[in-house]
Image (tube, rainbow, N blue to C red; front, side, top):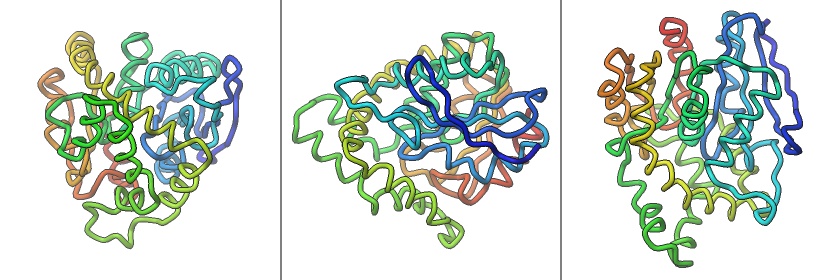
Length: 282
């Protein structure tokens, strides 16, 4: 059951593309990607786990091959991303699942957990932050935009959307960059370069402030429900510091924390190690 299927489904009029592998009789893992990626980021991990788990990886609204409605017709906020993702799980019949969250996938997935804690069997967070101490100085330009939504501050963030910047995010902190396939950052750059996508991503940069505001709520959920949690973290991530991984133990004392010698996109270099950690932890 290791073959991956590529599907699309109508979610209340919104087309969601997703990858699926494994036997549905096995425990389900919902894989939520981050910026500026898509479900393509899980291409190496899915075959390593599909013999034991049922894997489902959707493209979030505005990313990958999912629908890309104009901003006038769809508000690109994390609340909306989570609403679509939550309805997606219901439409395809997922009633209980573990979360694998990365980057933007973390605040999206944690919103799903807040809405339906009974559905969450475990959490794997791979460079998916929920603590103030996890934010590096790399967030300073974006935080400046939160405080002052001037056009100048918005325009200053466009540099984060260039092909060069996207490649840098993949390679920063990686000891041997020849292990980073160009497929990932090249595809991300292509998707990001489509008409209208830059404005969508700038909207999401602005709305990321809503995630930081929810950190205390996410942490209260961790304390109350004590989900089984595995944090696998590229220790050289320029955006989310290792302190963000260690902080999970403050609310979930039994959390399994593993720091890897790589950067933000840890799956590009450490898919096998992350798969082994998931097998051992889940």
